[in-house]
Image (cartoon, rainbow, N blue to C red):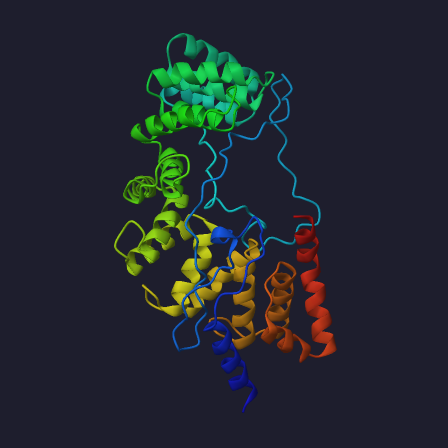
Length: 393
């Protein structure tokens, strides 16, 4: 049999087999109940498998991570430096944590009115003294957005000493005046105990209020709770409704979550085309898990027109962002020349990276062993910076 046919035959065998186990990383979702993720057998043609996407599971919610105490000057914060040893960016930063399996971070306070817009701009630019002064004046005049920003300033310790009690007081004043972001912030503070003791029922009450006021991430987080059924009784139709509201508002986490429900027929009638449409939206918004799922759907032509080139390009992006599954699938495509020109050295590089992160692949092991010693050495050198980053993550 010709070498090209051997490559394609092996590709078909792997791509029609159950999905390989994923190593637990920040860039890939954990398997449900701790089990290895599997998927139904792929079509008979040589197409990559679609890894089973677990339904999002809620974890402990978090408010903004505390910032270092800002100097009380008019000097903006220095731009964050690139971590030492990070591989050259390939259109995306790597690694990026998945947002699909945990509560989303609170959105920053949205400005309203000329005065508040100026105040918020000062805060965003790092002029905390100016922002604090202007926000205080506006808050004293009854502006709920300014009150919410005051809460955020005290949560972050931006130009002031970090003080969760004062933050809770300011958020409460804003929430009483119907501010959605303040209700959401209070939910997060009560969920992780920063408002005092951890109080899940109170957190859920504020999440409900924020969702009613149109806060998309509050709706998403609340949907996770109804999907999980631990803190509140499981209610799939309610979870679907909340995810849909957040998805329509543009929240990529909700778009991905709703796509998984449509794909599996949980809480809704199974609809592959709708699942893929939502995956496309979340993928374009940068959701890593959605990028992998959407790429595989594109390659398979499952729920959308097949496009191997677009699938390969998207798998490359997801691989560069740290998805071990994407790294493995992209290596396969490079080895076979499907959707992308065949490149044995690049295929070996991505295989080594994926393998170091827990994706075993005997066929690619054999493929690499058959390369010349010089090509293997080149691939290993190309993989080395990525492996160094992986070892620290």
